[in-house]
Amino acid sequence: MVQPLSNDHQALEKYRAYLHLLATLQLDRRLRAKVDASDIVQQTLVQAIGGWDQFRGQSEGQTAAWLRKILAHQLANAFRDLKRRKRDVRRERSIEGSLEQSASRLQSWLAADQTSPSQRAIASEQAIELANALAELPEPQWRAVTLHHFEGWTLQQVGEHLGRSPVAVAGLIKRSLETLRQHFQAER
Image (cartoon, rainbow, N blue to C red; front, side):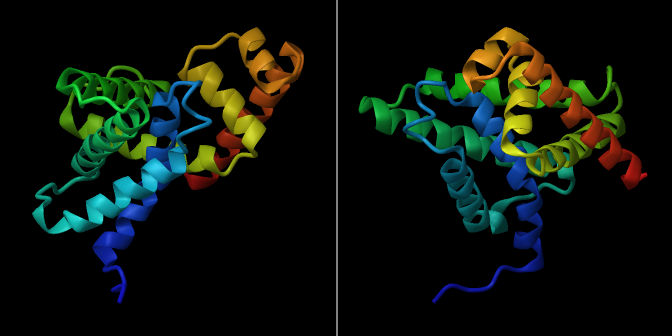
């Protein structure tokens, strides 16, 4: 029988969109057809719930870092399963580093240099909030923003990937940013 989640476990749910964004950014385009970011995130949250009693973090930043580490292991396992070769610890560390870079890009998109621990904690909370707001966008807008702003693709590359013109992609991104701006202004 499945036990209901405690409030602590339910609190992990707010990280779902954040983890999904990070997982999507890490999945190679060729693997996206074979590995679903949502499945990886679900496995990450299940493992986190299973290890919740061992987690000693006290802040959102620590929780996000712990979840990124679990996500990195889940991604490494997915890659290993697809490649059917022994796990290479160096590759797993590389995935953890890439996730940290993706999380840093997400945080840097929100604010410039944070030097104090409290500023970094606020940036981490904002990154989670941004990921949740991005998840509410229509799929084409979400995809255009993540490819252009987080993966650094040109409008031409995004357009080719989405089957749209660069002008149409620019429109998608503009509407997305307006929606996000309105979301964050309403939150204040």
